[in-house]
Length: 200
Image (cartoon, rainbow, N blue to C red; front, top):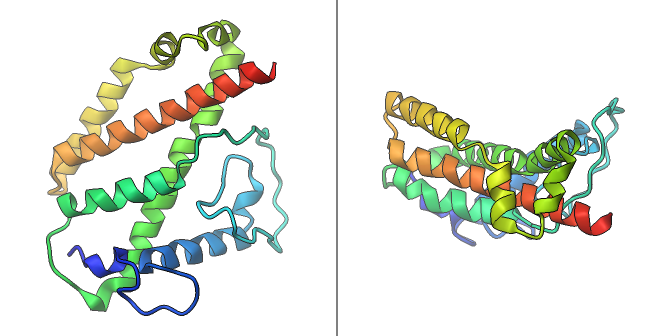
């Protein structure tokens, strides 16, 4: 069930600065991840930039540090995800499962955020393997075309639509979600390369 109260400001009484139960769940999940040292890895980052990221855990980090691009996606991910829910969930309210629902939502949003931000590393690898890609930066349309793999994207969307059908979800909704994830990842790739070229 949709349980719309989870996403509505002040619909569920929560002590502290949280406006929605989803926001409360997101912050709690990210605080837990931070305690495990997740955000010591440069390819990871919380949606809430004001979060204390200290961890008692020492992790061995071998992933290269890349700059965070000036393309904030945190609120875009949350807004897109919550706007999609009415197309995937039957209407109705289930207060007994607010906590479980908010947890699953928070986990999905964190994973979407991580997937999109991987665009920095995808662009980094592409720039290393084909440095002339930076020559296309002044021409955004050519740059996007150079970065895209249309056949692979269609294969992925076809696969997830078949999986959605097997799990009684609307394949077109799931296909649109993955198209959006790909487009947002591409936006991060483009922005990363633009900032890389400006810095050189």
